[in-house]
Image (cartoon, rainbow, N blue to C red; front, side):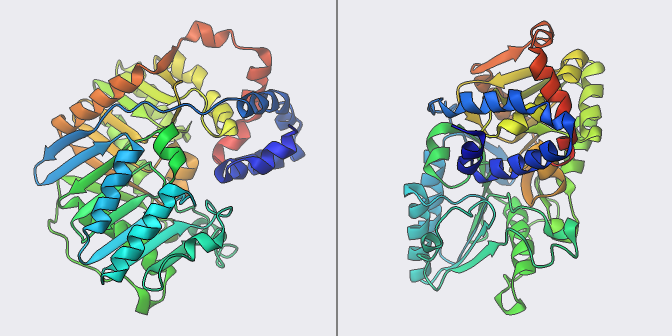
Length: 419
């Protein structure tokens, strides 16, 4: 299959990344040098079969007023989400990045329609760019009573305010009756239920207000005042589980600061799982300094993600990480899409943001932040279970990689600021 054909058949976010690469290949000889290695990689990936993702289990914690449940199985998560929608009495607020037109996606259409039919106020918001290939007729199935917002692929105000109007709506949040909240990496679709290792969390407690508010702020920016979701008072001024939400249209990006502060506080261990690791210099240096001062830094990433270009750009950081003493764990069993971290057995986060430029500096994202040793122990248990499906990359092995790979890593460095 030609590179052009693969480009046409690539997933949407992949296409976005490949578009950036295509531009780079056109303007510089250095980027052109990466093309042979990348093309070979793409061809190899096309012929690989999808594999079932491992399911480490479900983990429950009580953090003061918050009941937390961590899901690592998409089918189980979707069952609980649908059950929550079916039990809704007042409101359902759903925000997602990708909403596939398959059996799983149809379950959510049907559940939302049924909720609206019994008088529940239903709001649904999804990203326009991520769902460009989904037929409009799929979303047209939503009942007229369901209030729907499609975050535009290119906002009308894009050219006048790039920073405020360029972010993708990458959040995956659902709030039921202002008392049950879900957030994490799972998009809506059969692929994610069966073949991706992801992590989501359900919170019943004060943090639901923060999850609700993260969606409401964007919804109200995108809609007329008469269609706004009303403000409600929080249950607690300082909940034990905090919510951080990136809001590009308001130039607010707290998740990056959350990560920076947590990494800089670390004295014993930092265990991070992320689908794409393309940090800015401040995040990178914080990680390197932690490893150099003796912190047990472990970074888990896919051995091969669903975005080949992102993999190549990420590999450009491996040399520095390994030399600083960071343990690199390459998840090989399936695509790992989780966005979690736990530090010093005390601090943890679960959410939608990857450690890359898109998530931390451009996209709408939502993470929960928990300071609790029992919850951290659950995430450490989960990390250990996932580690059994990883290869540990060693520096001597990495230094033996092919010359073409080295050339590609160097040539693709200019893309770091875009991904």
